[in-house]
Image (cartoon, rainbow, N blue to C red; front, side):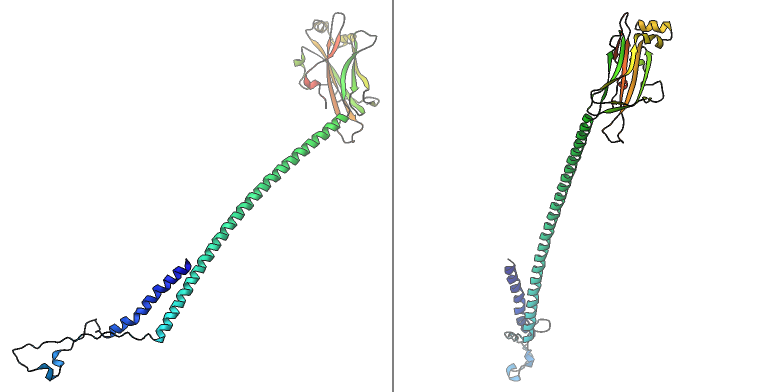
Length: 308
């Protein structure tokens, strides 16, 4: 298609250049304003005019223009025409090259845009993959930490509180601390208090003890896994020391008020590192006063029966 357009353009350029000498020769045979030259009769020889007489008008004879002769196409015109043709061809070739270059630039630009879009999509996908991997790694680390904590908790000592009746003594009870864990525990301190209240809702929201802080035992108490030790005895005779009036004792006997015995045991894991935090076991019991027999059972709000 470009070659056909180039050939048509060259033909259109050659036609005006070839007809130029013919029109130039014709213009030389006419007047300056394009009129045909004529020779008056007076300019003819006397023999051709004939006898003169006033009775006849002198006729005018028009001489036809001769056939124009094409002017010669000089070497200068040929060189000029060839130079113009070469310039036209070079201009056309330059235009075609420029158009081809622009098309290549356009295609390269589209390719670059496509590559940039693909790279952006790849980067976004990589970021999403990295985020997913990071989230999975975080979940795995969290699961590993929870698993490690579960293993540590399963291997640590756990002191639980129970109530056991005293052997050979009726209405006598002992609050016992037992190591139900898999590692030895050392009791660091204990705290306790006895309070008379209408019900559990009447107890303070936070347990209050007699001393400001737990008191440490005189001798170190170490409990191996499965071992127990009594931390608080209580009997029916101790009720009179708690109730400072006959009216309070009567209300307790009629179940109008209840007696709560609560406390906590602070202990540490002997197998764990020295900087490990101590553990606590809070406990609470309700003394049930009967006509002849009494009882002591675990009771109280959740805040009074916590394990750390």
